[in-house]
Length: 85
Image (cartoon, rainbow, N blue to C red; front, side, top):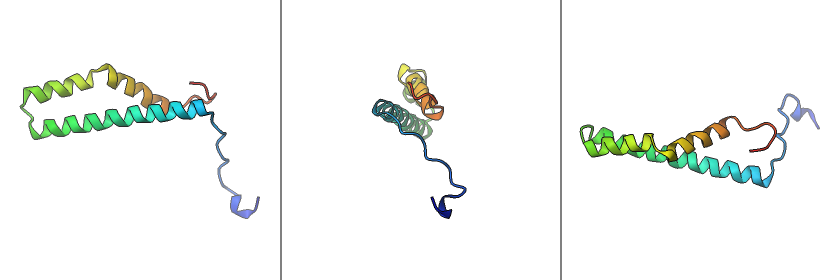
């Protein structure tokens, strides 16, 4: 390669279709959960003393769906260097 490649980082290794599909699924789960949290927080800020909205946000924050999204976000943040999921 020419001088333009000096000091550049090596390209990452190719990933399998399975790994890519897992990444996409994890990213979708994390983004969806984030969107729901943002909406719930915005609703609560607009109506801070509405017990129903407080309860809805509390339910979201303790939900199995958010726990799964946390795990998905962790996998995205620290992918397995071996490539297995």
